Length: 89
Image (cartoon, rainbow, N blue to C red; front, side, top):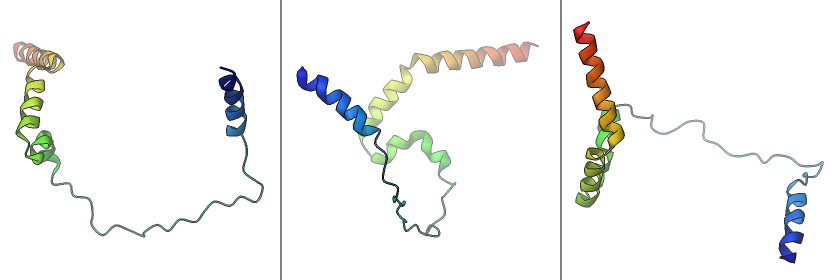
């Protein structure tokens, strides 16, 4: 307990220490660009991203979670209700 009472303030005080007046930020070598541009064509495939792993257990678990997700069911019900209200108006 005494160590904790001593170590806590010491760590707090040293965390606030400033770097010296001669500090210079390191120059990092960054590439001017990327070899390939980001692809935007795969956006539709991300709806079932877990199938890319080819794992039947993962697919089964995700599909079960989606079926049993009450938030999704509520959202679907609200969407159906809103569409019915719009059709009735």
